[in-house]
Image (cartoon, rainbow, N blue to C red; front, side, top):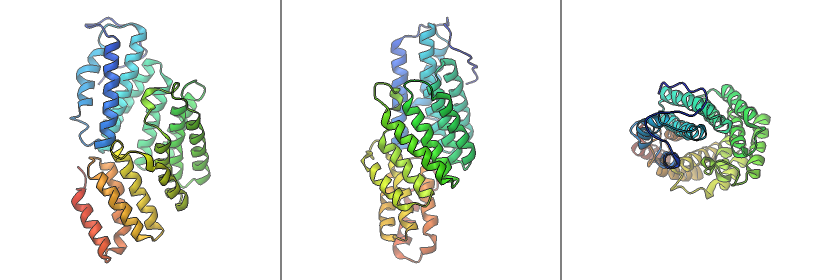
Length: 319
């Protein structure tokens, strides 16, 4: 992975790179995203995507192509590399994740594609936030937004950057900043027209925003808002987005528990565990382990003890 890319130019190499190669790369990106959402990043190293990058994409960069094809090639490889980085992050392989993110930034720069670069930077912001560095995450998300805000066609990318920023502000307890960023994120997403945003952002929908907003308001201690957003996110299909739905249910369960609604909390927590037991994601399982910590003071309650035991069986510490 040690290539240094400055900018895509035409390149003469062993094989000619054409439209079919690019279509195949984007198909790999789509497959990677679906596999990651449904099954988690636990097998990121052995995944077909990592193999695709190693055995297919990297050799293509050594091929013969025009400048225009080169840009398209770097763009697709950047997104593939970012997706592998995210799967590695999901499995808590943080060093590998960081290396892939930085490589993806380089590829985006070589493609001259500011949207892809901003998207990679937003992913890095999410990683920083999830690792407990909210102020660093705010700076990265803001940087991604500033970089892309004057370009046409990037409304979804900008919305996603503001959503990441809102999550980081909320985790830092900065309520006004968090709500302002979330409102802007919503407005941007509402403006996004399907024909203008990049196809690799099709997954980013109103339900996806609602999923993250549930956690934002939970972190701000606004339980009524958190539960209202969680209802909006209900339309997201759990068979496709197993991990995201499972995480949101764990967050919703924690809101019920903070409201002292044990019945509702345990019912929703059970749904979360049922989904997340199908997913190899150390990150997602962390949300459930947070629930068992919240429940610890009530372990005398039979139902709580049963839930904790069931969770221990369904979700081994990490896989």
